[in-house]
Image (cartoon, rainbow, N blue to C red):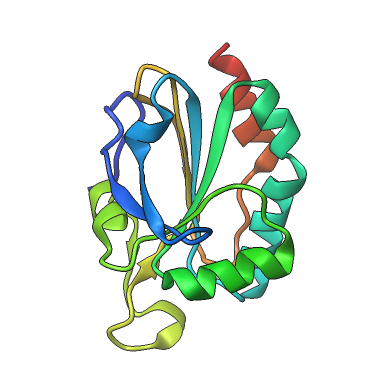
Length: 158
């Protein structure tokens, strides 16, 4: 079941691809957080999505918000992807699918590959109180998030 607005955001500890060190949601306690789950590094829509968040990062930071990208790709692939695209926020590896299971955003048989489970493209905005204040789930992996709505959701947190 997908995490709903008003729910306490499930905690997680994943690998930060930038330094191969653990990163937990609790590391950002007291900040607003934008969790951007994406299916696969080096895919066109995912590149567009992460680069759009990259280009908007100053705006999110001015709202005391941390953007985190999450996919099931291994850290070394994510690092290469982030470096290639100048992604300037943490990209976390959910290699064991802990976060996508906790948030209910598993996408089975992704890209027609039998048995391959990726993250459903989705965005969760978490307030400083640790509760989900807004969410968006893609109907199709080719759909990009409504970026203006994500920013408005963070602005609404004050």
